[in-house]
Image (cartoon, rainbow, N blue to C red; front, side):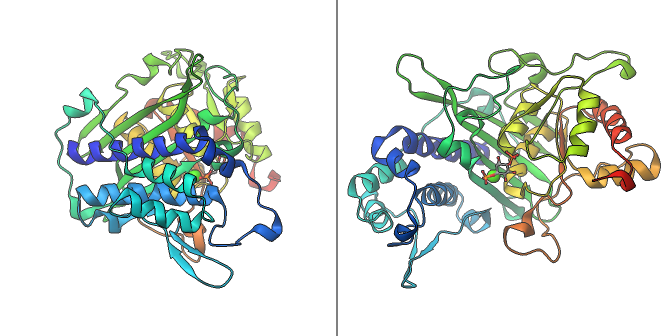
Length: 401
Ligand code: 2IP
Ligand code: CA
């Protein structure tokens, strides 16, 4: 159904515009970078402006999807709750109202009476977004609306969004940090099976115009449902990313001779880093943002994104996972891959990440953690051989530290 995908794209673009406004409009940027002193915290309703920006973007996505597909808003899930409570225990629910004026006056309450900031934000929230994507117009796939739910990460890589520079130089096409690592992630999955079927990754700060210093974004989408696989990037490896400087390995006919490129988090464990370095032979990269690292795989800048820790969540992976599936790849649970390969000497199973089940016994956000870590890949053929080499280079369990 191209209409749903079109709406996801439109919502992601509205979200990206709000994210850009918060960085580029002076009235909002000052609030974004403002550090609250201890005695100012929770003075009124506002916890932090960055939390408000995150919550508001999530509400806009929910509101816009619900307007087009009534009922769907109940199945939009994300990290943020839209309820703010002040020190007196008073509550305010942040939501998109029916008019720009109403939204502005609601926001003014959370923004310590800052009228200019509230009006600027409300304008971005109620802005009409029209966009054209010819490839998307051609998509004719119907998905069951009564069996889908949506994971949203309104602003992934929040730290880079607030503190990140816009002048970081990429290494082999990959930004280790900075505004380019910020993404808006909207992923659709089937509630019964938990499989991701549609995703949009929007990068609000992709290119800075050297003349105007204004940012331009870019988006990526994919659909993988009942044998239909369609993606905005049909030949990612060939495109090699926005500047054509991708560093992913070249295909060779001799699997044993291939070397791979991978990206991971700077928070990755030492033993895993050792194994990745051994397999990647100088092509191991670090980048901020779970969504951005997935984008590096989607764009063909690297072959794999590997992370063994449990600090990514369903809202981080659902959207890029759907896009990777549409390209013939996917996202697997890393610890299950390792266990299964050790049992059968080969990676015969594909333990794909699923999006409908909570982690048993976990609380809060951890209920939706990708508990066993992850491996994101674009090519099935490469996966087998890469995992084989990677696992061989991991220390035995008794040697892990
Ligand atoms: C974060 C963000 C971090 C990432 C972490 C995510 O989401 O993407 O950058 O850590 O896993 O949960 P790292 O960059 O080390 O991979 P958010 O910014 O939305 O909290
Ligand atoms: Ca995130």
